[in-house]
Image (cartoon, rainbow, N blue to C red):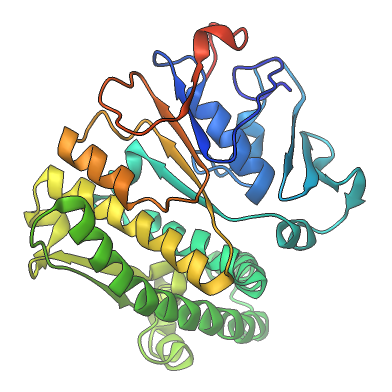
Length: 345
């Protein structure tokens, strides 16, 4: 209800999945986005839930039957996020997330994973880490809050060193957990991404993923060494917020030397690797949300991607046409499922 461009909308998806077909700007992506919000309490398209509220409304609601339970998420500008499972209120987001499932989002803008800023790649790792380990989400949120507070202190003309020192201790505690977790994630993702690249590219493209820690080998020592620079710039200059991934194809930087086709394939491989890692580590099959990614792929890569997706996973796919598709899915036509606000997002 009141989500993006929809007043109300109700859909049933088969266990195997469905293809949602329609023209651009008709709300296809919003349907997948609603699933992601219901399951993971976040959107891959916006960092603020308030932006998902339908124009001129004060909040939205998303609910669904999934994994043997009825999940419900309500958001309002005053109350924030409210969650229910089987009509029972769940006060903590971590508790709600622990009762839900896993998501792999594959979108047309995944190309930014390869050639965009480091922030995109950090968010990719964080989305995996938060699904694998509730403690990761807790440490990441605490790190970000401490980082913000510490930067405010560093910007103050009258530096309060005891307070900065106190926040530095917390920054180290939570930052080291995040860095260690990301390092382990990249180590596990690498072989899965290599395997996926071979499946989708249908040629011998060697890819590699290396973790570049934004705090070096020791966050505490790095903070000591950069203390003077921090005070001069008024911000924390080392830590997980500066982490990066070094992505290479055939030994060369993917962002600089790979063709657009190779970059798109590598982005797909990173998402396929995410899905495989989630399944292996948890024993649960993720739901795959594929948002309009086929228009930029040639027919061979389209069908190679479909073959690479787990057979038993539920796949919800949006596309403008299905002439190329070989697999049999239930097709949902956007023209027949509800009214769309003309200024809808």
